[in-house]
Length: 438
Image (cartoon, rainbow, N blue to C red; front, side, top):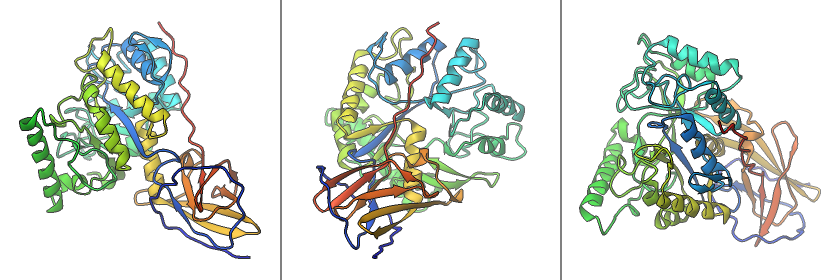
């Protein structure tokens, strides 16, 4: 019997795969692929629901992005794209407490299916801890939770002190709620940081932002982004994520609680606060940008607003629809995995902190998954959902099986390239629910 044990993580790709039944090796090693097998990059479109006028617009956007059904914008593109939700907003904006019973049922259905995964603050009118308690009690009543928090403009409940100016994490403030919200299940928070860099979790690079037809404007964008990077390198905490071009980092809120912050991107030549609309996505989701994202083997959580400056009768114009079709082709071809904000963040978070070991014995190679050793949550056992998409590269042509921390043998797909074996735990797409068309 021989055995090889490894817990280190690497970021290699498997290359072209072809089926073969290989013999088992006597001694091997293993590493984790950066993304699920076949894909070169990952992307989520993280939209703030500001300016959404009613539940009909919200539903039509979700149907267009997530199904192939006929919609006001033509046949849907069949991607996997989530959305965010408010609770307390003025009457002109769609929010949980503003809509009717059917609208609230739609929201609950989409939270349950994973297609609403972001709490976009508690809203402009949520000014007290009691407002947060009321929203969380409603979610608890229906056994629902939202795992991602995104600050909203200048909402009092925001977590961000330096950019978004909230007091939701300051003990003693009227709207202090961080303890309740994190206990509810929020794991990832966005506090206003946006970058122009195409793709995170890759070396910092400003290539891809320059627009030769708009030299003055794109030069300003490049200068601003370069300044953020330099300020981060000299120790300015506000720009620490820009220094490393990091997607995720552990942080401590003002009440002492730990959580994970994430960075959004808007790689548009006019800057992070321009083209943050559905119409703007026509320029952002360009062939050069998508090519560069895949070439860099990077990950992006795009900052936008699906309903901002759009026609409620047809939220996406034809150039934007063409951009979504362009993205869908990249996804279907296995180049860019498009998924919801939470699923992307969770995948990268688990992948970067997973432990595992490898044994080779009696003609079989086995990957034994261990705990996730996390800087915020400590050592914890990953759920089966959290293991979706993980791809182990074994440096030999072998029969490979993957076992969960419990010892359970997991379904996985093995492919072979050269002298290596690629064992992938399947990535299961979300199922989009049937929505009431009222």
